[in-house]
Length: 251
Ligand code: NAP
Image 1 (cartoon, helix red, strand yellow):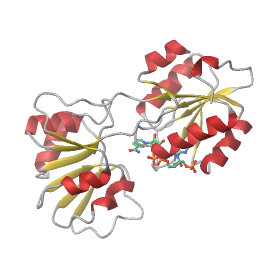
Image 2: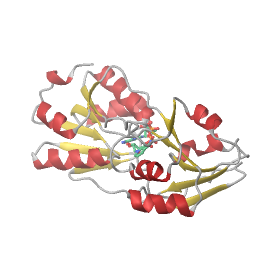
Image 3: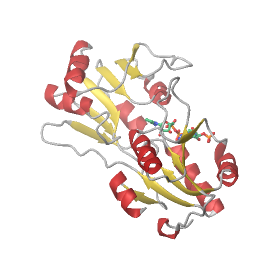
């Protein structure tokens, strides 16, 4: 895999942004504004996704082999992996495909949230540790992706609320008590209302970083609620920048 500094795009080559995050939308807008040939790729997880500026495609590539074929077919000269810090599979596929093709890759990953005065975090490394850390009889707000919900169904001594953009399909089963509320992360004021209204005792979330879902962390601080914070696995072998400004400076 070549480093970012080696990249020279020829006239026919394009930049592929692996997206689905607010940073990826902002980056697509900036690169499109600079008249750079850019395509954003979305996984297609939500029913009505926000569409990025410039060209885009939607749906999985079909594993590493599918991504390699796509990179060649579209004459991609640079991959910018701007996917969510917990979208580990697409990140590892992108690194493998970049290695296989010799195409340069750059990772845009927002910095971690850091605990501040008034925060009561229990930091864990895995989903399983988060499951085990939930106190008995707690009312838990699961602020995690739908694909991770089922890990918590073994805790039938606790009750859960999860908030999703779309209803999960298939619906999670084996839960003794799980309420799914349709909605998105909100401001700290609305999150205080949400946590209070649902009598939440504890939040389980991942250390996503960034402002979009920080409202619940501020709300937890205000309400003195504990948070079980699941840490990230940072990919090795890829040049990583933490802001669009830093990335644009490199371009
Ligand atoms: P993941 O587990 O890392 O990836 C699973 C599979 O989904 C990948 O192997 C790939 O399928 C496909 N995929 C993922 N991102 C893609 C993209 N940008 N373009 C094309 N295919 C993609 O991913 P995930 O955690 O389900 O996240 C899916 C998308 O939602 C990502 O784009 C991510 O940025 C966004 N997102 C995720 C979270 C989160 O909490 N994980 C939060 C906000 C946004 P193939 O193997 O078929 O190529």
